[in-house]
Length: 285
Ligand SMILES: [Zn+2]
Ligand SMILES: [Zn+2]
Image (tube, rainbow, N blue to C red; front, side, top):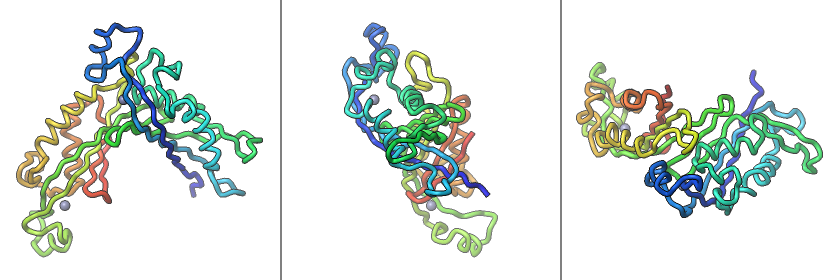
Protein backbone atom coordinates (compact mmCIF):
# COMPACT_ATOMS: atom_id res chain seq x y z
CA UNK A 1 0.00 0.00 0.00
CA UNK A 2 1.30 3.41 -0.94
CA UNK A 3 1.87 5.92 1.81
CA UNK A 4 2.87 8.70 -0.59
CA UNK A 5 0.51 11.66 -0.91
CA UNK A 6 0.72 14.63 -3.28
CA UNK A 7 -0.27 18.04 -2.00
CA UNK A 8 -0.78 21.16 -4.13
CA UNK A 9 -0.72 24.66 -2.72
CA UNK A 10 -1.96 27.63 -4.77
CA UNK A 11 -0.70 31.19 -4.38
CA UNK A 12 -1.27 34.28 -6.50
CA UNK A 13 0.83 37.30 -7.36
CA UNK A 14 0.60 40.28 -9.70
CA UNK A 15 3.59 41.33 -11.76
CA UNK A 16 4.44 43.59 -14.65
CA UNK A 17 6.69 42.48 -17.51
CA UNK A 18 7.56 43.15 -21.13
CA UNK A 19 9.01 41.36 -24.14
CA UNK A 20 11.81 43.76 -24.95
CA UNK A 21 15.46 42.86 -24.37
CA UNK A 22 17.83 45.80 -23.78
CA UNK A 23 20.64 44.01 -25.64
CA UNK A 24 18.61 44.06 -28.86
CA UNK A 25 17.68 46.96 -31.10
CA UNK A 26 14.01 47.95 -31.40
CA UNK A 27 13.92 46.28 -34.83
CA UNK A 28 15.42 43.06 -33.46
CA UNK A 29 12.96 43.05 -30.54
CA UNK A 30 10.03 43.49 -32.92
CA UNK A 31 11.32 40.73 -35.19
CA UNK A 32 11.82 38.36 -32.26
CA UNK A 33 8.69 38.94 -30.21
CA UNK A 34 6.20 39.95 -32.89
CA UNK A 35 3.00 41.41 -31.54
CA UNK A 36 4.23 40.90 -27.95
CA UNK A 37 7.16 43.30 -28.43
CA UNK A 38 6.85 46.55 -26.49
CA UNK A 39 9.29 48.71 -24.51
CA UNK A 40 6.51 49.24 -21.95
CA UNK A 41 5.19 46.87 -19.30
CA UNK A 42 1.89 45.10 -19.14
CA UNK A 43 0.75 42.96 -16.23
CA UNK A 44 -0.75 39.63 -15.17
CA UNK A 45 -2.46 38.18 -12.15
CA UNK A 46 -0.43 34.98 -11.95
CA UNK A 47 -1.71 31.82 -10.27
CA UNK A 48 1.05 29.46 -9.10
CA UNK A 49 0.32 25.87 -8.08
CA UNK A 50 3.13 24.09 -6.24
CA UNK A 51 2.86 20.31 -5.92
CA UNK A 52 4.92 18.38 -3.39
CA UNK A 53 4.77 14.75 -2.38
CA UNK A 54 5.98 12.51 0.36
CA UNK A 55 5.07 10.06 3.07
CA UNK A 56 2.57 11.09 5.69
CA UNK A 57 4.28 11.92 8.97
CA UNK A 58 3.46 9.39 11.72
CA UNK A 59 2.99 12.12 14.35
CA UNK A 60 1.30 15.00 12.56
CA UNK A 61 -0.45 13.13 9.74
CA UNK A 62 0.89 15.57 7.14
CA UNK A 63 3.21 15.41 4.13
CA UNK A 64 4.37 18.89 5.04
CA UNK A 65 2.90 21.70 7.06
CA UNK A 66 1.16 24.04 4.59
CA UNK A 67 2.12 27.02 6.72
CA UNK A 68 5.79 26.18 6.18
CA UNK A 69 5.21 25.83 2.42
CA UNK A 70 3.55 29.24 2.47
CA UNK A 71 6.53 30.68 4.34
CA UNK A 72 8.87 29.35 1.64
CA UNK A 73 6.67 30.65 -1.18
CA UNK A 74 6.29 34.03 0.44
CA UNK A 75 9.98 34.58 1.13
CA UNK A 76 11.38 33.03 -2.07
CA UNK A 77 8.76 33.82 -4.71
CA UNK A 78 6.10 36.32 -3.68
CA UNK A 79 8.56 38.76 -2.08
CA UNK A 80 10.42 38.97 -5.38
CA UNK A 81 7.47 38.92 -7.77
CA UNK A 82 4.33 40.35 -6.22
CA UNK A 83 3.63 43.95 -7.26
CA UNK A 84 7.00 44.10 -9.02
CA UNK A 85 8.26 44.65 -12.53
CA UNK A 86 9.95 41.36 -13.41
CA UNK A 87 12.32 42.85 -16.02
CA UNK A 88 13.44 45.70 -13.79
CA UNK A 89 13.46 44.22 -10.29
CA UNK A 90 14.66 40.63 -10.74
CA UNK A 91 18.25 40.62 -12.04
CA UNK A 92 17.85 37.21 -13.73
CA UNK A 93 15.33 38.79 -16.11
CA UNK A 94 17.32 41.94 -16.85
CA UNK A 95 18.24 40.54 -20.25
CA UNK A 96 16.06 37.42 -20.45
CA UNK A 97 12.48 37.20 -21.68
CA UNK A 98 9.98 36.72 -18.83
CA UNK A 99 8.12 33.96 -20.67
CA UNK A 100 6.11 31.42 -18.70
CA UNK A 101 8.78 28.85 -19.64
CA UNK A 102 11.57 30.98 -18.12
CA UNK A 103 9.49 31.99 -15.10
CA UNK A 104 8.78 28.34 -14.23
CA UNK A 105 12.48 27.45 -14.41
CA UNK A 106 13.46 30.41 -12.26
CA UNK A 107 10.77 29.76 -9.64
CA UNK A 108 11.78 26.09 -9.46
CA UNK A 109 15.38 27.10 -8.80
CA UNK A 110 14.32 29.64 -6.17
CA UNK A 111 12.39 26.89 -4.40
CA UNK A 112 15.47 24.66 -4.36
CA UNK A 113 14.97 22.49 -7.45
CA UNK A 114 13.64 18.99 -6.94
CA UNK A 115 13.56 19.30 -3.14
CA UNK A 116 11.70 22.11 -1.42
CA UNK A 117 13.40 22.94 1.84
CA UNK A 118 11.06 24.18 4.54
CA UNK A 119 11.39 24.64 8.25
CA UNK A 120 9.47 21.81 9.85
CA UNK A 121 8.76 23.44 13.18
CA UNK A 122 6.66 26.52 13.68
CA UNK A 123 9.64 28.16 15.32
CA UNK A 124 11.67 27.43 12.21
CA UNK A 125 14.25 25.50 14.20
CA UNK A 126 14.49 22.35 12.16
CA UNK A 127 14.99 22.29 8.44
CA UNK A 128 13.26 19.66 6.41
CA UNK A 129 12.88 18.98 2.72
CA UNK A 130 9.92 17.71 0.79
CA UNK A 131 9.96 16.48 -2.80
CA UNK A 132 8.83 19.09 -5.33
CA UNK A 133 7.07 17.27 -8.17
CA UNK A 134 5.45 19.96 -10.33
CA UNK A 135 4.79 23.65 -10.81
CA UNK A 136 1.90 25.13 -12.73
CA UNK A 137 1.84 28.83 -13.59
CA UNK A 138 -1.29 30.40 -15.02
CA UNK A 139 -0.68 33.70 -16.80
CA UNK A 140 -4.27 34.24 -17.92
CA UNK A 141 -7.38 32.08 -17.44
CA UNK A 142 -6.76 30.79 -20.99
CA UNK A 143 -3.00 30.12 -20.79
CA UNK A 144 -0.83 28.19 -18.36
CA UNK A 145 2.52 26.41 -18.25
CA UNK A 146 3.57 23.32 -16.31
CA UNK A 147 7.01 22.17 -15.18
CA UNK A 148 7.50 18.48 -14.42
CA UNK A 149 10.36 18.43 -11.92
CA UNK A 150 11.37 14.82 -12.61
CA UNK A 151 12.22 15.59 -16.24
CA UNK A 152 12.56 19.39 -15.97
CA UNK A 153 10.30 19.53 -19.03
CA UNK A 154 7.97 22.46 -19.56
CA UNK A 155 4.65 22.34 -21.37
CA UNK A 156 2.32 25.15 -22.34
CA UNK A 157 -1.47 24.93 -22.52
CA UNK A 158 -3.89 27.13 -24.41
CA UNK A 159 -7.62 26.90 -23.69
CA UNK A 160 -10.25 27.20 -26.44
CA UNK A 161 -14.02 26.81 -26.68
CA UNK A 162 -16.46 25.55 -29.25
CA UNK A 163 -20.20 24.93 -29.19
CA UNK A 164 -21.50 21.91 -31.03
CA UNK A 165 -24.51 19.61 -31.27
CA UNK A 166 -24.53 15.81 -31.29
CA UNK A 167 -26.51 12.73 -30.45
CA UNK A 168 -25.16 9.56 -28.89
CA UNK A 169 -26.49 6.72 -31.02
CA UNK A 170 -24.65 3.59 -32.13
CA UNK A 171 -25.68 1.93 -35.37
CA UNK A 172 -24.43 -1.32 -33.88
CA UNK A 173 -27.01 -1.26 -31.11
CA UNK A 174 -30.81 -1.62 -31.20
CA UNK A 175 -33.01 1.41 -30.53
CA UNK A 176 -33.86 0.03 -27.09
CA UNK A 177 -30.21 -0.64 -26.29
CA UNK A 178 -29.23 2.89 -27.42
CA UNK A 179 -31.83 4.37 -25.08
CA UNK A 180 -30.71 2.06 -22.29
CA UNK A 181 -27.01 2.97 -22.65
CA UNK A 182 -27.16 6.65 -23.53
CA UNK A 183 -30.39 7.79 -21.86
CA UNK A 184 -31.29 11.39 -22.64
CA UNK A 185 -28.08 11.72 -24.69
CA UNK A 186 -29.89 9.54 -27.26
CA UNK A 187 -32.83 11.94 -27.80
CA UNK A 188 -33.48 11.83 -31.57
CA UNK A 189 -33.11 15.59 -32.20
CA UNK A 190 -29.80 15.84 -30.40
CA UNK A 191 -28.48 18.31 -27.87
CA UNK A 192 -25.43 20.54 -27.48
CA UNK A 193 -22.43 21.39 -25.35
CA UNK A 194 -20.10 24.32 -24.84
CA UNK A 195 -16.93 22.28 -25.14
CA UNK A 196 -13.70 23.56 -23.58
CA UNK A 197 -10.56 22.31 -25.30
CA UNK A 198 -7.11 22.47 -23.68
CA UNK A 199 -4.19 21.94 -26.07
CA UNK A 200 -0.78 21.27 -24.50
CA UNK A 201 2.51 21.58 -26.36
CA UNK A 202 6.12 20.97 -25.34
CA UNK A 203 9.63 21.31 -26.70
CA UNK A 204 12.91 23.07 -26.10
CA UNK A 205 12.56 26.80 -25.38
CA UNK A 206 14.46 29.07 -27.77
CA UNK A 207 17.43 30.33 -25.70
CA UNK A 208 16.86 33.94 -26.67
CA UNK A 209 13.09 34.36 -26.69
CA UNK A 210 12.47 31.81 -23.94
CA UNK A 211 9.55 30.47 -26.00
CA UNK A 212 9.21 26.88 -27.19
CA UNK A 213 6.48 27.46 -29.75
CA UNK A 214 4.83 30.44 -31.32
CA UNK A 215 1.48 30.82 -29.58
CA UNK A 216 0.20 32.60 -32.68
CA UNK A 217 1.06 29.55 -34.80
CA UNK A 218 -0.57 27.25 -32.23
CA UNK A 219 -3.74 29.35 -32.23
CA UNK A 220 -3.81 29.36 -36.02
CA UNK A 221 -3.45 25.58 -36.21
CA UNK A 222 -6.14 24.87 -33.60
CA UNK A 223 -8.47 27.42 -35.18
CA UNK A 224 -8.07 26.05 -38.71
CA UNK A 225 -8.06 22.35 -37.83
CA UNK A 226 -10.63 22.22 -35.03
CA UNK A 227 -12.52 25.40 -34.11
CA UNK A 228 -13.47 26.48 -37.64
CA UNK A 229 -14.63 22.95 -38.38
CA UNK A 230 -16.36 22.06 -35.07
CA UNK A 231 -17.77 25.33 -33.74
CA UNK A 232 -21.54 25.76 -34.25
CA UNK A 233 -21.70 22.46 -36.14
CA UNK A 234 -23.38 19.14 -35.65
CA UNK A 235 -20.53 16.75 -34.87
CA UNK A 236 -22.46 13.75 -36.21
CA UNK A 237 -23.01 15.26 -39.65
CA UNK A 238 -20.60 18.12 -40.29
CA UNK A 239 -17.21 16.79 -39.17
CA UNK A 240 -15.52 14.46 -41.63
CA UNK A 241 -13.39 12.53 -39.14
CA UNK A 242 -16.42 11.77 -36.96
CA UNK A 243 -18.62 10.40 -39.74
CA UNK A 244 -20.14 7.06 -38.82
CA UNK A 245 -18.81 7.22 -35.27
CA UNK A 246 -20.57 7.61 -31.94
CA UNK A 247 -19.57 11.11 -30.88
CA UNK A 248 -18.83 10.39 -27.25
CA UNK A 249 -16.23 12.73 -25.81
CA UNK A 250 -13.78 9.80 -25.80
CA UNK A 251 -14.15 9.50 -29.59
CA UNK A 252 -14.13 13.27 -30.14
CA UNK A 253 -10.98 13.66 -27.98
CA UNK A 254 -9.12 11.02 -29.97
CA UNK A 255 -10.19 12.59 -33.27
CA UNK A 256 -9.00 16.03 -32.15
CA UNK A 257 -5.72 14.65 -30.83
CA UNK A 258 -4.98 12.70 -34.02
CA UNK A 259 -5.75 15.67 -36.26
CA UNK A 260 -3.58 18.07 -34.26
CA UNK A 261 -0.80 15.47 -33.99
CA UNK A 262 -0.42 15.33 -37.78
CA UNK A 263 -0.01 19.13 -37.82
CA UNK A 264 2.25 19.41 -34.75
CA UNK A 265 4.01 16.02 -34.54
CA UNK A 266 6.98 17.31 -32.52
CA UNK A 267 5.14 19.56 -30.11
CA UNK A 268 1.72 18.14 -29.23
CA UNK A 269 1.79 16.57 -25.78
CA UNK A 270 -1.83 16.37 -24.59
CA UNK A 271 -5.37 17.48 -25.18
CA UNK A 272 -8.13 17.76 -22.61
CA UNK A 273 -11.75 18.05 -23.63
CA UNK A 274 -14.26 19.33 -21.11
CA UNK A 275 -17.73 18.29 -22.28
CA UNK A 276 -19.32 20.00 -19.28
CA UNK A 277 -17.72 21.62 -16.26
CA UNK A 278 -18.02 18.25 -14.57
CA UNK A 279 -16.44 15.83 -17.03
CA UNK A 280 -13.08 15.97 -18.74
CA UNK A 281 -11.39 13.61 -21.19
CA UNK A 282 -7.63 13.51 -21.74
CA UNK A 283 -5.43 12.05 -24.50
CA UNK A 284 -1.65 12.31 -24.29
CA UNK A 285 1.24 11.50 -26.60
ZN1 LIG B 1 2.59 39.07 -20.50
ZN1 LIG C 1 -23.74 15.23 -25.22
